[in-house]
Image (cartoon, rainbow, N blue to C red; front, side, top):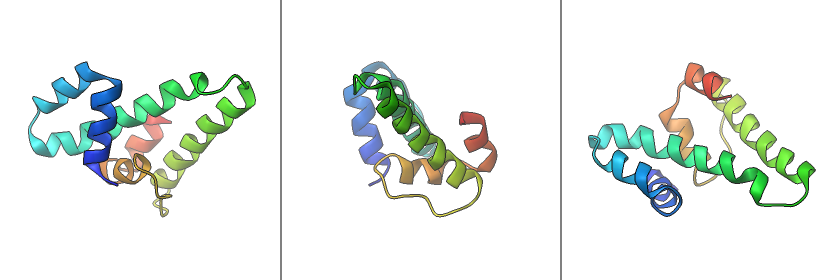
Length: 97
């Protein structure tokens, strides 16, 4: 789990953003790829199920991740959540929420 996993998700899910991130300097990529991967996860949540309640649960899970980051709490292990926590500070997590 790390930035490379996020980069692969972005490469498959949003090739244009992947290419734009690859044009950035490597330190910036460590921030861009987790944020872009988070965007993909949130954007696809409603389309993964026909049940609205399940989609809401998925979105709430991500809100809980952002709350953990904002509160400085340990973040659950996940291929996007873990690198996202390393890329964001409390203010950034609150803004994304």
